[in-house]
Length: 201
Image (cartoon, rainbow, N blue to C red; front, side, top):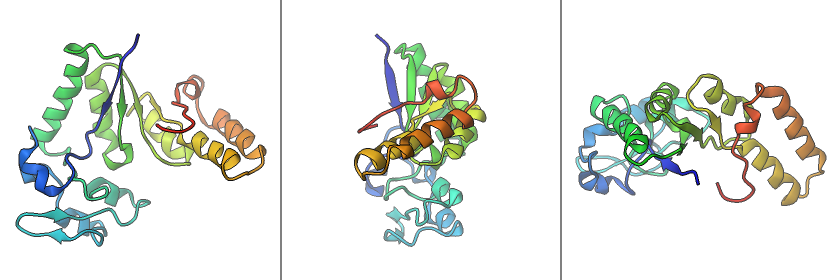
């Protein structure tokens, strides 16, 4: 039996009020605030920031900078560039193999953290890493694989094609076209590592 563990390094808790109780990330300085989010053009959704609450959401999910510094649905967004945050997360990844002997990691919310950090995290883990890149765009998925940020991604592009055919009643050619496009786009060996799923990831 092999064991894969889900890793969430983008956000913590449910709301900003949870931050003081989150160990080891109980300090608000460990998170992106509204200043960075608003500078990136986001933060119009949510209630904004004051002395006790920071609630600045991503407004445009096609804007890479907003995705990196704004909150995903109001979840407190970790700042992986903060030395304490970076050290804790990388140490956690190392311990997954050293202490628990896991065989692989599944990385959550990949586009919401810098690719360079993911490369450090997957290297620190020393195990196979597959990431959640929720897009129909194979080029975006391939960027994380070819950059070395992770070994594979969950195959959302194929999932969306399957959904188009079997739920939305598109012609089977839609599915055949997706498979052909992936065979042409991915380097030899990478296509076989994509995480295929039909319903829940």
